[in-house]
Length: 417
Image (cartoon, rainbow, N blue to C red; front, side):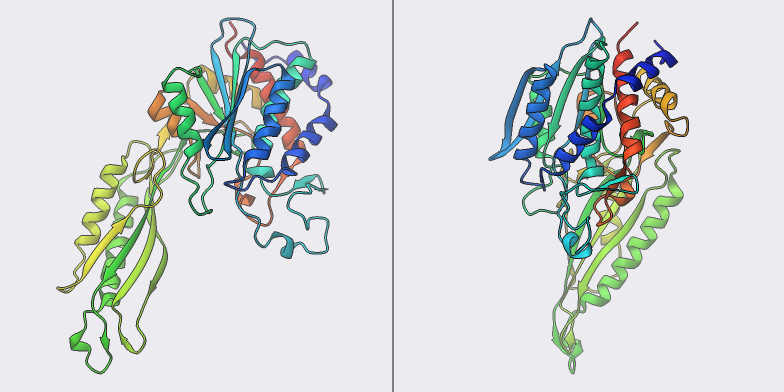
């Protein structure tokens, strides 16, 4: 079923823009830095209840940290559409200092300046969550019942950066509930990470590796008594840069680009002495079709193949396990799936300049759905990832309101004949 002009006009006429902006303002005004998602989850539970959703529940995936979910029944046998996104945001350190004395000073005040709403989490990804909630409300206002059941699931613990958090504990709990049959397995999913209303049908994979190079320190006057960890680290860095170049030559994905290794941190040295230990960190990008097990094996072969002197020991650790013990797997679905084509049509009916099929320049939790559950999923929502996690986080009001029309149009047709 296609997106016709009459549907878009009906939805535009029925949209209460002030109410939609108030919803987003309240969302930003409810802080939910990773580990403190409960208040925002409670707010969303109330919104889902007011929509008429069934089985609205707050379920803790960790003490004091709930996921929220609810099911809004559709008109027929159109299957189940999952609308999901994370409730947590990154920290606000430095925000008040950066904007002191201006209307942006509070990261939770959500001022609108020159057509953009500012605040922590407004782009990543509270606008996305509010877009799908407001879209469901818009359909009700317009008297349109979606063909499919709408399964809302908003989860915590996606963002990294806070101690003991950021390991996708919330999404792991949701997946376990779906696997156990306690919540419905969806036929398609939209994860509302910011895409500027383009559609991300593929995403990169990643691993983070911390490498410790250990030798033996010695006073500078008798360097022959030491084993130089810094010199060994130089050889290892050269091997890593060569490995990255090999990865880039080896493969190219049309949506995600090249794999590579990026060394992100280095620490080492001695005080007037032979350096006895050095530490470095790196992130390795994978593309769809590559596996983390193979990536780790190749990486370790490169590191351990570096020419270092006898007595050097090398240890490697992988601290950022997500849907895999070593990191996050890449994922991809067919661009030709009817749901993908329908979503692109809905976007272009409202914003002809958007709706492109692209690859995500980030890792988020769609692989749990695609690779583990076999549920096709895309990212699509208003917002620009380039300003997220920064002190410049903001979102275009026009894009947000357009996104509500887009999502409502898609919901009105998904699962229909």
